[in-house]
Length: 95
Image (cartoon, rainbow, N blue to C red):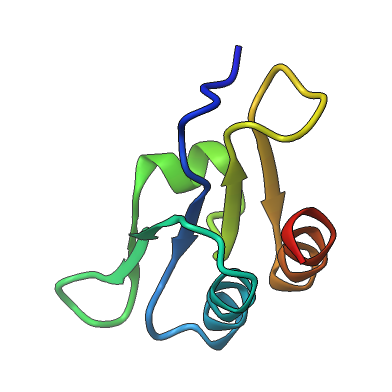
């Protein structure tokens, strides 16, 4: 089952405006969350290094991804991908 004490995790990238939009939604709703830098530039600066957690949550490897560990009425964590979906989910859940 889901851990009821766990905080939502936002898999993000500080250079991504879409991920920033999801972060702002969480902040505006006062949601205590863990911000995880899940996507960074590789050594060449031309590609990306993606955390395994990001690829597991979203096989496309795109940010943002919100992981809600304890959604109401659900036994398992809920994964929400795409900034528009995250903003809508945050507003519905905590807004």
